[in-house]
Length: 100
Picture: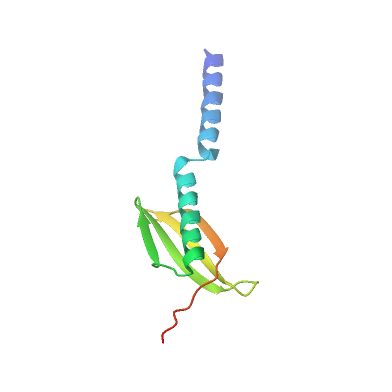
């Protein structure tokens, strides 16, 4: 009986560790969405909005000061219900609106 309890306890600890360290589908989806948003901003050179909401996940886009190469840095922060899901930073070539 004691042996069964010990084996069960060890199995539960292993299962708990696997669940905590495993890569979730949600995190992969968030990372892919942030990369897609960054790619769109790189191509257009314009940040569409400061906050985007896709599938109840909020993506906050910020243009930081110039990075080490002299280009502005785009920072994307993903949150859901106040919980931080991911962060993505990249350099962009931002286009300025020229009015004639």
